[in-house]
Structure formats: structure tokens, C-alpha cells
Length: 585
Image 1 (cartoon, rainbow, N blue to C red):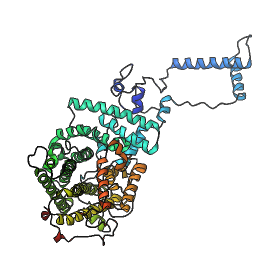
Image 2 (image 1 turned 90 degrees about the vertical axis):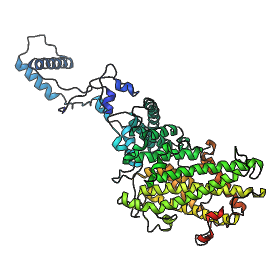
Image 3 (image 1 turned 120 degrees about the horizontal axis):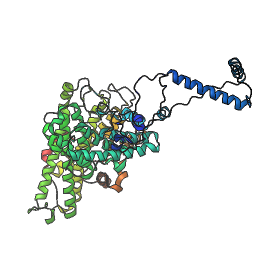
Image 4 (image 1 turned 180 degrees about the horizontal axis):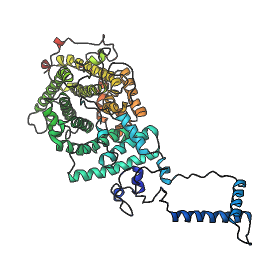
């Protein structure tokens, strides 16, 4: 066998990982930097050296001596007479060769080759993770889920991004294939990633690099896949916020930068929703500023506004329920006039209705943006409820379907906060407190409830496209990267699965989707919010829905009819002329 190249003189571990070794003795510095034990140096391959006349004679002499010794020891022959002639020796060798059985040579492969035949946990996990959880790269620049990762990943290095990718990939492989070694390696790489991340951010040399931001997003994805903390990104929210602010407006200049920014903002909004903390919801006000020019970023800005309004309504509601609405304690903190609290609540509610109008405007204007910017992609619907009601005519690609789910989920959060606040006010109506015109509110609430059901129907209608069960033409298909869409919409489905206004059929469908995400795809955080009450994650949402269910069962007077189980044709539909949001106040 001829060796076709230069023999590697690196250490055993660098050879196995196929990376360049600095060949420092007794252990290489590359292994020390990445915290891996160096296996040392040894020549595992033995090549034939250049033959010379003297070496050939030595080998021939040694072979002859060993053959003679073997023959004498085997046949117990002792030559005590004169030295045999060459002719006699040759005849004896021929006789021994004819009578002794032939043994096939034993081929022992070198140790290095045997090591290469062992299964590579890194390659197995990487291939599975990229195939299932990474969106295919689109030429039109539409953001997906980590579609840029294959271009950034360098197989010849073991840097921050590579270690973070291995950590999440090995956890995904553990959920899919089992094997304790996958999980152990995932946690080990997670620890190395955190250490390298801290050093990078502390030095600030490359903190604004795409690879650093992508590494934090991968760690957030690890939380979803492992199910640790119900997928709560609280550990990484401060660092993520810091990097997005540090990168500034320049990060929106490239398609990769836009995708990184949008995925980062989505993670921060999940944190804001779970913890009712608006500190990190809009880093650098980038979404608010650039939302005027880019509808996708404008959608993120509207989602930030929704979360702020929800948190303000919840604070007002708890304050008034504890201290009363019309009493001296009903005033807002720091206010001298008891009526100031009611006025502030009215202003917040008016802003909520303004945001609902902005969602309608976004639905109508975004169609032209899709046509002019993303050539060949399907168009989003122009009105709320169009996805479900026109399912036989509207088809979507996976990324567009995920975007619709995210926008609808923000609208759902806002509507549920408004309905909960109004229900709390009605419970305190015996104090003579009210907000606006009660008769107009009755019609308004009925419209809001119907919008909630339309949102849920639209979200569930988008799921087959988001997970790749239907292609952009509406035909059944199968895709390997269903995990990419599942990571993006998992929290949206969790909202639907525990929504008070979802029908039994819708709840069952949402739980089926979560089961598939959890068991089949391997996203362990894909469980209803109710399952994490002990940790306090999602408990606020669960409490809100429980409150609204109790109001529904009690037959609260602010509900026009309890038509949750009625067909769409039987549900109460107020005429648009009878509902004027301005008249409500």
C-alpha cells in the first residue's frame, strides 16, 4: 500500500478530530486551550523504509537464522558432523516447505485505523441537528431558523460557535436516539461554551461578531430542546440584549443580520412574557425605529408594545382588586386624585385598541411588501380569519406560516389581557365603578371574543405549513427540517393549548401538536404552560385563563352569549355599525 501524502505528526486527539496540531511536546497546546486531554504522540503507521544492499543482507541473514532455529527445534535435529553443502540445505528447505501446512498471514490493522472505525458522536449529532432544526437557506433573504449556521460553522476549529453547536446538537441527538454519551458530551460542551462566551464578552474584541450572537441563540435553543426551565431564556437574556444593542443599526444591513436580530428579539419577548419584565423587550429601540421601513421589524415592534400594554393592564388590575376601584386606595401610586387611576386605565385601553388597529393595517399592507421583496413566496392573508376560512385557496411556505403564527400570538396575548381586565372590573361593579359605556362594552367584548377564536383558527391552520406537512402549493409532503418551524412556533402553540376561548377541538389539536414536538421532534419544552406552575413559568397565563373560564361559567353579565360551542353561523356577530370603539369610552 502506497501512502499518497505527508504523514501527520500531530497528537492522537488532533488526528482523530482532523484538526491542525501545534505539535507541542509532551502535550499540544490546542488540546489544553479547549480543555481536552492530550493523548500524546505515537507513530501508529509503520511504513517500509528505503532498502539498501546492507539492510537486505541483514534481513536475509536474520530470516535464514530464524528458519534454521525453527527447523532444529521442531525436528530435534542436531548437526554434529561436517557442515552440509548448499545443495543439501536447499533440498532440506524444499522438503520442509512441501510437508509443513501453509498458514495465511495475520493482518493486524494499525491502532489509528481501528479508532477511526468507531462511531463519531459529533458527526452523528451534527448531521441530525442540521437536517432537522436548521431552515434551508433561501436566496431571497427571508429569515428562517438559523439558516446561516452551515456557512458559519468551521469543522477545522473548536471555537465558540462550534462548541455551542455541538452542545445543542448532542442534546437533540440524545432526545432522538438515546445514549447517555450524547447527553454527557452536551453538558460538557455547554460548560465550555459558557466559559468561552464570558471571556469573549469580557474582552469585547469580537463581541459584535455574528458567530457570538449565533452562539447565544444556540444556547437558547438548547433550553427548548432539553426542556430545562420550560425553555425560559432568562439566563441568556441580559447577554443577548447587550449584544443586540452593541451591534446597533448596522446589523440590519445583511440578510444574516436581520435573521439574527429577529430571532434574538423573539427570544427576548419570550423572556418578557414569562417574567413580565420589559427591560430587554426592544434592544436599542431598533425595532421601533426601523419598523417604519420594514414590515417584518415593524411586527416585532408591535409585539413589544403588546407586552408592555399587557403588563400595565395586569399591574392596574391587581392594584385595584387589592385596594378597590373607587375608594381612596383606588388612586394610582403617587396620585393625589382617586380618579387618576381610572383615567390612566382608560388611556391604556385606548392604546390597546390603537394597537389592534395597527395589526389590521399590517395585515393589509404587508401583501405588497411580500410581492416586491420576496419573489416566489406565498402571500400572507389580508384580514384576520382568512387563513382558516379560505384554507382551500391560501397556501404558505414554512417561513411565512411561522411569521403569521407569531403575529397572531401577539394579538392573542393583547386580546386576552383586555378581556381579563374588563372581567375584573365587572367583578368590582358592586362598588359603582365602570370604564366607559357599559352597553357599548357588551358589544365590544363580543367582538373581541370572536377575534380570539379567529386567531386560534388561523394559527392552527398555519401549523401544517410551518412543520412542512403541506408544501407551498397545499399538497401533502414530508420534510426533514420540521424542527426548524417547531422551535419558532412552540410557544405560540402553548398559548393556544391553554386558552380559555379555545374550543375542545382546538385544545385537542394544540395538544396533539405539542405531543409531536415533544416526543417525535424532541423539543422537551413543548408542554402546556399549566405543567410548569411549580416553577412559576407560564403560571400568570394559566391564572388568566382560569379566571376567564370561571367568569364564563358564572355567566357574567358582560358576556353577550356563551357561544364557545356554537357553530360559526350560530355565533353572535354584531354589526360593524353597532360597535364603535370610540363610543366605548
